[in-house]
Length: 126
Image (cartoon, rainbow, N blue to C red; front, side, top):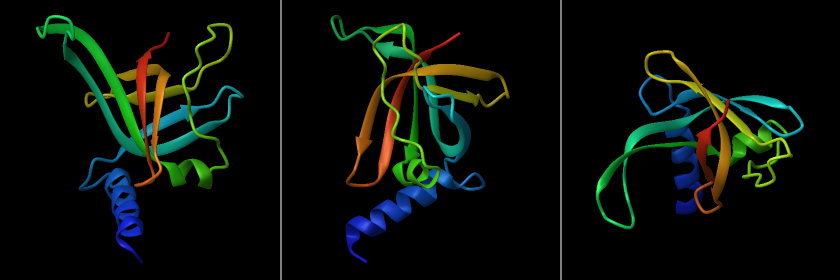
C-alpha cells in the first residue's frame, strides 16, 4: 500500500469515527430522492471574514466532509450544487451538538480524489 492509499484509508477512518474522531451522523438525499445515511465531519459557524473589508461579520458557513467511497458503496453519485432553482437540489441534514436538526442544500461540491474525500459547501434550505 502506498502513501496515497494509506492517506485515503486514514481520512476515511477519521471521518467515520464517531467515538474518538470527527464522525457525525449525516443524511444526504440526491435529486432523485435517494436517501443515504453517512458519517462525516460537519461544520456550521456564524462568523466569517468579509473579503472586501477584511472585517469579521456575522454570517453562516456550513459544510460537511465525507468519504467518496461511502457514496460509491451506497450506489449514489457524487453531490454537486444545482444552480437551477426549478430543479431538486442535493440535500444534507444533520443535528447540531445540541440535537437541533438543520437542513441544507449543496451549493458547492469539492471532491478531492487524491485523498478520497468530498467537501460540500452548504446553504440553509427550508
